[in-house]
Image (cartoon, rainbow, N blue to C red; front, side, top):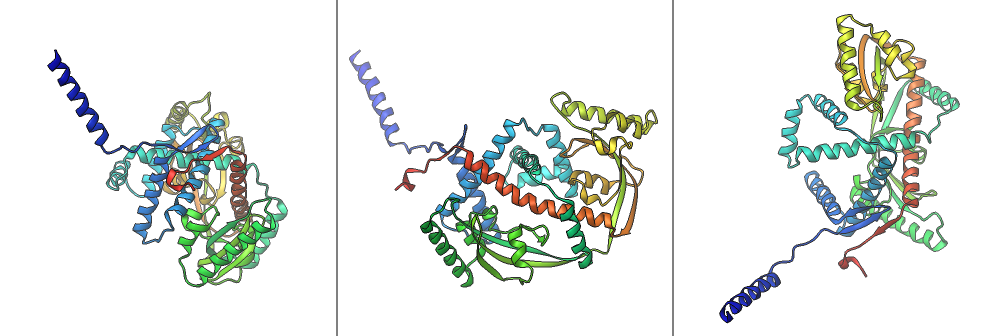
Amino acid sequence: MKRCNQLIFALITLAMSQTIHAAPEPLDRVTVQINEGIILESEVTGMVKTIRANAANAGQKLPSDTALRTQVIERLILTRLQLQMADRIGLHIGDLQLDQTIENIAKEQKMTVAQMKAQIESEGTTFAQYREQLREEITLGEIQRIQVQRRIQVSPQEINSLVKLINEQGLKEVEFQIGHILIDVPSDANSQQLEAASKRAAVVMKRLKDGDDFRSIAIAASSGPKALEGGIWDYMNINEMPTLFAEVVTDAKTGDIIGPIKSASGFHIIKVMDARGLETKEVKEVKSRHILLKPSPILSEERAKSMMDRFLTQVKSGEAKFEDLARQYSEDPGSAAKGGELGWADPNIYVPAFAQELNSLEIGGYSEPFRSTHGWHIVQLEERRTTDATDKFNTNRAHQLIYRRKFNEELQNWLDEMRAEAFIDIFEPETNRG
């Protein structure tokens, strides 16, 4: 018995020895608490890794680890706040809508879903991960549209003024690619904080004038909405831009750096990265009609699609008339009473999924049921035509341009408000603490 006890003791001692000398396994931890949710350290490191890989592929320089980490955490905080809002209002992107979106993306890239899946997996991402990333992107787009669109009003006076300007320009415009850096200032800043921010802006401006890389500086120093994209905004014309941009780039040339410009948000530095001319001489329009069903807690995605399949079969067989079904069932109040008629329009005014279906149809053809951000559709292309730009086209274009400009401005305001009202606690690792 004594020998047995000695053997057991030896085994326990060996096990403890191996435990003591084994390499410690890093555990995930909470990095940020946001209201009732959290961001894990693995999410932060994963996003940093992705940005570094993308930067390496693009030959892009990145700032210090600390600056990059700060920007990543800020982006994750804003993303999580938006997803929390989506949960609160019951916004959920179902698998059926997700599948339809993936089909649309594959079609746009001229490949099958299977081919797209193979390509995604060859790049090191599982298709399941891609689906969830896409679901999140759609959710963000939807919650932004729902929350921001109601804050926007476009007056007839604004439209008329812009239509007049468009007519004077003969639809010849220039689109600018803008680089933007914001050195933020607290809303209740004192004189010392203002002076410190002004000095930081001056230092950034000097580095840019000395030839430092704009994108790297933006990632490291900017508090603007496009910081992680190197401060780069997509091509915009004067009428789409945030007002601050439009006021300073009218006479600017590619490569010009403007600023610092003081606003309520802080000090802005703007660089004209590129400019390209646009000329519209004629407009390709389509005449179409559709039926729309909007999924809801009462009408599921599956049920809506099943109804659309039945409607299409009835129309093609002659059992029912398209216009009668539209009047009875369509949930588009603007067209239902007219038998689903949408009239003549540039297809680009519609949401991408709808425009894509119209562009793929032959005259007289019907689409299969498809999902857009508005719901499930069947659309018929009735006619096509090419026409000169009309007053109606100019009015629609003016409304879109003003709306997009206001949307960009109001989106930033909404995000700022959400962040200010949220409970946010950032837990820095021990090595980062003073």
